[in-house]
Each structure stands twice: as structure tokens, then as C-alpha cells.
Image (cartoon, rainbow, N blue to C red; front, side):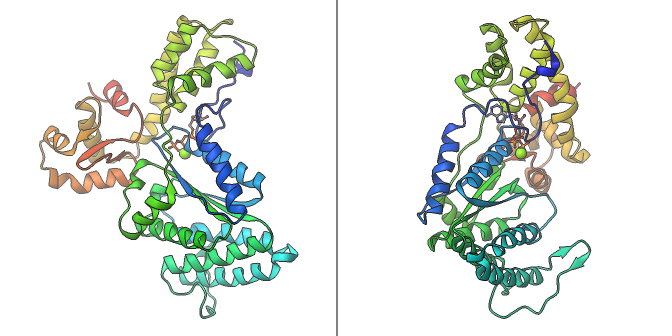
Length: 389
Ligand SMILES: Nc1ncnc2c1ncn2[C@@H]1O[C@H](COP(=O)(O)OP(=O)(O)OP(=O)(O)O)[C@@H](O)[C@H]1O
Ligand SMILES: [Mg+2]
């Protein structure tokens, strides 16, 4: 059918034509933003899910919801290599600048700017090649302890936002790339701010391993945050993710063909988009049939193998690759670390650092003690299909 009218949107963070199966998460975010703005308590949320399940898309949607509710928003994608202080600086600066042009919050925003300058000097934030040097004004955001200084900074931002009758929503994607200390400090700081009923809310997203925090941050986080799982869509939502967009275009898909797509993709959002996209293009005319879906499956798998799966494999060193290949040889996950070691003919202790490094790269995670699994759905199939001869 006409490829120009193809409604499907396979990609990273690309808005799907039908955001299926996420009503609960969305309505919880709507309620939370409205409550926080009224000075009531509500929970921040951390969306946890595997690769390609729709976390970024949801976080974008939530940012929109927060903006509509009257929040200033800061969206950060944590890369693997930068510090949280460095990432926060330009975002907080931008928010304070917006608040400083509002009469009611000018003074509080200026206080915030002073705190931000201290914070930047303390944590050696750079802009371009220049490190920020100022004489820190004693007393605000200058302890050098990230947790305390974030609290100070957030307090100032919260007070300025409140004075303007607005809120501030901080959204951080790829949270697993923050180190444990940063994530802990962030969580504790958000908690402190919420205790003072300041209008700040935090939404995060990341791979499931970030649930494994330690110490204070963990006890705070368990009580104060919700962790909505963002997984494969259930059968009903998966059907509607394919059917709705097609019908919206005035076309049809046969029920058997629809079932075939849902079963081939196991309901994973990224795969649904890819299968929908290829099935539309494979069909000569409406309705899309099972024959079309079979043709599309070859094309979809090839696109995944050459893109989604391959880019992730290429981030591993040869030794790390051996490790994940050994996992795939064992069949479907989760895998016992001991079994992977046996498969490689090595000792489990010797493999510890390698395993930890692959976790840091976000390729595998530990769903339970001593267990390991892929963060990319169907990655084991990919490895068996393309790497193991
Ligand atoms: N609820 C949904 N229904 C249908 N399609 C969806 C849904 N959520 C996301 N998608 C589609 O899935 C794909 C992946 O979405 P997204 O990039 O948000 O996933 P992600 O979880 O952030 O992945 P990653 O962990 O790799 O960053 C996109 O093509 C998007 O359009
Ligand atoms: Mg994402």
C-alpha cells in the first residue's frame, strides 16, 4: 500500500501512531502533576523496562502533560560519560532564567542563580572548554556533598517556581547511566523537597537494574517512588497498536494477519512498529493478509538484525561478546551466572568483572541474585540466528 501513508513509526523515541496500553501510567502522571502543583504530596515515578518498550516515548508524553499542567520542564538524557552536576547545570539555568523574568519570582530566581553558581563551581562544571570559577558565597550549595548541594539547589528552584505559581518537572531518561552515588543523591534530594511541599516532581526512565539501589536511597526510593513496569503490551493493547493506525488510514488488516504480528513480536512495542511498517508496505492492497505478514517478517527481521540488534552488539569488546554468546547458547533466559561460566569453561569469579562491565554498558541485567538476562528483548534469538554457526 502507499508507503507515503504508512502510519507506523519504528525508531528510538519516535511517537507511535497509537500509544497503546499505557493509560494507567499516563493517568497516574496526570494526577501526580496536578496534586504537586496544588502543594499536595504525590509520588515521583521511575519507569523501568527493557530496550524498545516505549520508555522514552512515555517520558516525552509525561513532559507534555506536565507542561500543560503549568510546569517548567527539564528533560535530560543521561549519557554514559557525564556527571549529573554537568547535566543539571544548563537545565536548571534555563529554568531559573525563565522564572527570573516573571515579576513574582524574580527575587527567588536570583537567589537560585547564586546557588547554581556555587553548585557549578563546587562540582567543576564546564561550559564549552571553560570551567566555572566563582568565589562561592558561603552557605548555599557549596558543601561539595552532592546530596546536600542538590537539596539546596532544588529548594531554591522550588521556591522560585512556587512564587511564580508554577512547578518544575525534572525528567531523566537512561537513568542507569548515572552512578549509584548520583542516583542516590538525586532520590534523597527529591524526597527532601517533597517534604516541604515545594512544586517539584521527578520522572525517570531506565533499564531494570536501577531498582537495585543500596542504603538510604533504597529505603527512600521504595517508599516514595512508584516503579511502573514498561514491558511488552498485553494481547489487547498489542492488537490495537497495529489495528488502530491502519483503520485510521481507512484500510484494514485480516484478523489472522493481526494475530500473526502480535505473536511474532510478542507484543514488544518497537517490534510492533517494525512489523506494522513492513506489513503495510508488503501489501498490494487492503486488507493486509497473512501472506503479506510472512513477507514482512523477513524484511522486519533483517532491519532489526542490521540495526536495533547489531548496534548493540557492536558496543561490546570481543571478550564481552564471548560472554553474551555463551548466554545465548544456553537457550532462553534468565541464565545462571554459573551456567554461563561453565559454558565458557571458566570460573565464575574470574568472569565477575566482565559481567559487571556488560551490565554497565546496559546490555544485560540481573533480574535476581545470581541470575542474568538480556536487556534487549529477543537478543538471544538474534545471536543464535546470526552469530552462532
Ligand atoms: N505504547 C506503545 N504502543 C505502540 N508503539 C509504541 C508504544 N510505545 C513505544 N512504541 C514504539 O516503540 C519504539 C520504541 O520506543 P522508545 O524509543 O520509547 O523505547 P525505549 O524503551 O525508550 O527504548 P530504549 O531502551 O532503547 O531507549 C518506537 O518506535 C515507538 O514508536
Ligand atoms: Mg529510550
